[in-house]
Length: 221
Image (tube, rainbow, N blue to C red; front, side, top):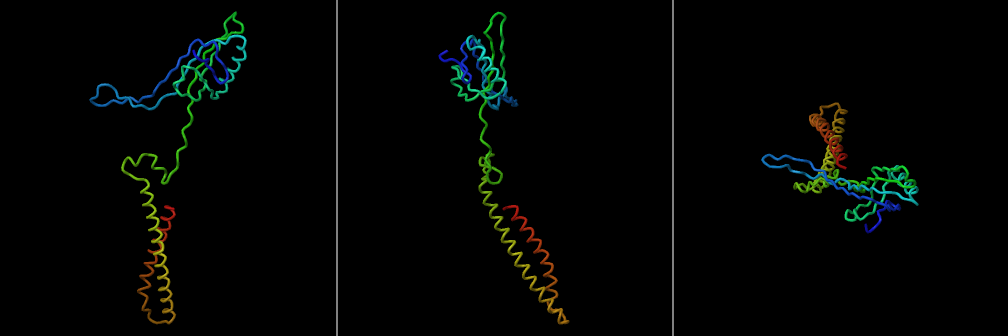
């Protein structure tokens, strides 16, 4: 080997074997009329490396303790070796660690270490307008989430105009009702009574429209 394999600052001087494994997950799909099985790639599994070797005097005891501590903590480590130079692995974790001391071989330990790639977490999902619909590839379906935002803005504007119109109608109805009250005070026939009756009906409708417009504005704001 051109370089000595290392786990963080620990040099593995007497490495006997290095084995690297890469595996990919596939979902097998059967297609009617197709000979064979279609394999849909789901993603690559973590690269794994098996290291076996010996810890020899004079640093065997210290290196053994360091490796045991790292395996026990479960923290990420940096592993460097020629066998992983083409894999662009940043961090790894020690999945398992086995140490063995033979009878009569004082100060010498055999070991086997299994390391697995520990990739960084992906960036958090971005929150965009209308729940991030753009992240789901709706543009590929001919659907523009941005245009939907424009439509919703227009609806909100129309809701505001509708609420203003309903308010104006209620003001007019109040004025007609006041006129009817004056006629009642004169104790004569009320010529505006039919109008006020209809105004009352319209007032109930306008009130409902105003409430609906307010709810719609609140939902779209």
